Length: 164
Image (cartoon, rainbow, N blue to C red):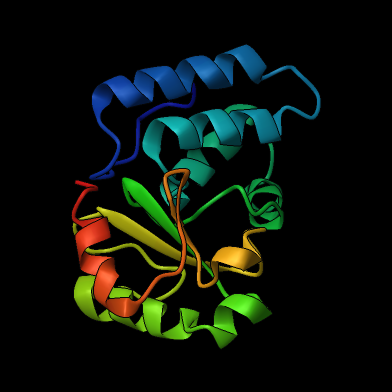
């Protein structure tokens, strides 16, 4: 154990703490290793709960505010659980004009999530993005690297039911 007792957290089991301890031990004396530690720990847990930020802080002997500052600066880090599948809906001009707002509204209605949130069952995370580079297919949605174009709100349920 790197820094004493592991904090209680419903999303972090015993074996995960062992992996986290190893990551911290391997990077404790490496200057500027906070980003690498955060990335590897997030890969294990799926996000960075505050208890984990504090634990990393103690293990690395760095103030929690510094670790939090690094994690909050970079978009690749998340403080909330992510879903098993990320839905990205393009909100660029072409997609918006052709109905991407209605696509997002249908996802919100069907899965009870807002943009930037994760469904309660952690099946989906919903993100709106500025451009997916597929304007000719507007409106466009990407799920786990699969691109869906020329969408209508009525197609959403059938597409997303393929992602369990």
